[in-house]
Length: 287
Image 1 (spheres, rainbow, N blue to C red):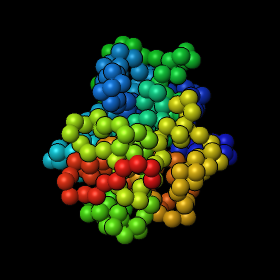
Image 2: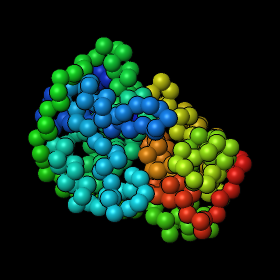
Image 3: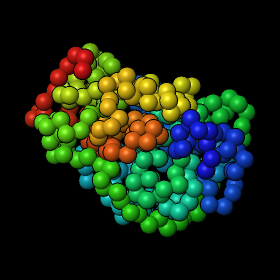
């Protein structure tokens, strides 16, 4: 994989992917997922049009079904079954995309990588722009994936669970980077999940995921570093990322990894867990 010196090593361009569609060992994954307010249906859009050969990764169903929280990480065997059913192997080169770009694809990039698929990348730009540029689009019925064997090796050190998160808030042992928008972070805007408290964890920094991309493309490494540091993060210290349900937190994770930061984890329960409990401290206003 070759990229420009100032670009993330974890993204690929339209030209790169377009020239390789159909190559053996290359798999393409549509990871589009949307909030209700966006009035878009990722599965329906995939059924209507997709990058040729793509499969659809349903972020609402490939989860830990024993949890009452959305988007919790499945057990390795469960993830392996789902990935294998999509025709994915941990040894494949996998390119993940979403509609607008740098929205929900990084979550599946992160999932595949923590389960051992180390050659997984995010498509820079998103499918909306891909279509606008007249690049190949498949509109016939999506073919059934040829099942594959996915052998998972979970890197559980990349995940922060609730008790660890509580300790981080209590001790300040890791910086907390919250990907939600400023309104939700400060508590001015209500959470999209009914009845959930607004605000943020004590000590958290607001790093809205939208500041890390432009036009659906991840910013350059110098720009990412500037944005992360301007949000109050010390890139020489550990970071745990969080958001509403663990999806857009992965955009921060992607940015951190891109600038060479390795001491980072993602809080699995995110605000759905923290804000949904009655025994967790919450503050409002600016960080």
